[in-house]
Image (cartoon, rainbow, N blue to C red; front, side, top):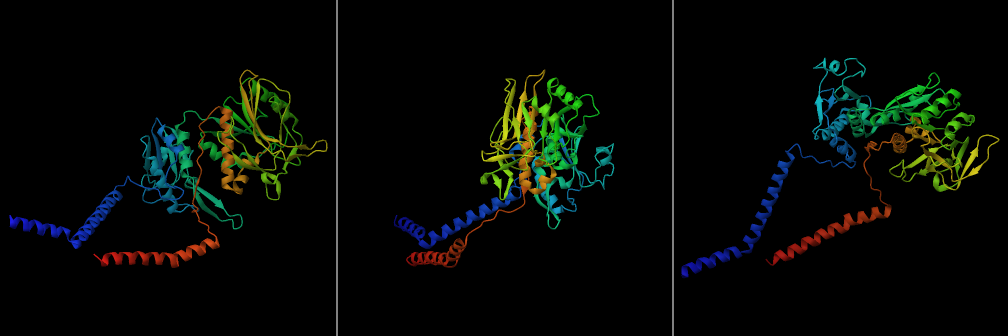
Amino acid sequence: MKLLDGIARAILRFFRNKNLKYGVNSIVVTAIVVALLVVLNLLVGIPQIKFDLTPNRLYSIGDTTKELLSGLTEQIEVVALFDELQPPSTYYVSAADAEDALKMLDSYTSYPNVKLTYVDPDKNPGFMQELDPDGTLALAKGNFVVRRGNKTKKLVLNDLFEIQTNEQTYESQVVGMKAEEALSGAIQYVAAHETPIVYFIEGHDELALSDFASLQSYLLNNNYLVESLSLRSLEAVPADAELLVFTSPKLDLFQSEVAMLHDYFFNEGGKAMFLFDYSEYAADLENFNRVLGEFNLAINNDKVRSDDDNYHAPEDPYTIFFESGRNVVFSEAILTILSNSRSVSRLMNTKEWITQTSLLTTSALSTSEPLTASGTEKGGPLDIAVAVENTGGMAASKIIAIGNGSFIADSAARLGAQIYQVNARMFLYSLRWLLGEQDTLTIEPKDYSMPQLTITASQTNAVAIGVVFVLPLLIMGAGLVVYLKRRHL
């Protein structure tokens, strides 16, 4: 018994030894750290686990795209016409930029109905002929082709990036990525079984369709074909015209066009968007106002000035800030800027079959400046954009009249990408309402700029004092406390 008791006491003394206690703790902590490192190393080795830690989530798709991809019922193939290990480049886009876009493209392939295929035309020269037997796509190495059956959409590398030109140096550079917008738009386009046609009307000294290249890209990404059309040589508006767009006409409609539009609206349930830019030389558009009068509207030959400093650009009362609010057209509040606008009048002869919605309105501190000697100056608030539905014909018709047309032209895109994004979204919402559709595809480009932290001089001094004096004192104090405790162990 005494022997066993002695052994037990010796074992207790061994485990109560402070050196052993702290030594075991060190071993346990070390073992835990090693285990964590092993687990992290294993996780890194699994290719499916990736984290997008970029500030703007450059390589991640958003909720709009996820909803689109989840709803696909047929196989969509994205064909990249280059070697996967050798990303293409252009004069503006580097191979490193292209590699970033390919990382974004990887997110699409996690959905079962999206397939990604790489084909190098140098190694398989007949493949492009197979993709585009008629040569209508004019394919080249470095392009992307999105296809469903025989319906295809071509993307060039520059389509995947936001490229901005410096107005002083005229040098262009990549400032952001819009790969998600381009790819998702192409997928939506080929997945749709019907593609509406939007006709931009010509023949009245309007802005040309070529002045709206950026807008055409937006419309194509939202499954619309865009074509120009002259009504003068026609007897009726084409049956496939889902929407007519008049872009800043300076000359009036012909009488035959007035009759044609009356039939289009009230017998066919037509839809149209009328965009009128201010012009010092524009005549009164009487025939346009005859057409608009059927919807209780009139476009004024004036120039709108804001007298409220909170609602116009500095030293420019003709560049006005607008907030739309939510309504039947805009599902979200739209903040936009329009320069040199006309006003739109809502006529007083109320008709129960006409429903009007004001979309953009100035503040009360605004003025309509007439451009003719017979005109009368009017005070605000003034309507700049109005939506109207007329159910008095054989079929319901809709129009939107806006006293500005250049806000969606390429000239506006050059003034600022963010402003143009808002303007284009406003146009798309308007188009969707006119056609009775809801699923607008709006995906913002992802800016390459890194977020910056700006601090004042006093904050800089405080940080310097903390780093140079406070932090070292805290470290020394912590070390002294540990030393005093361990000295008595």
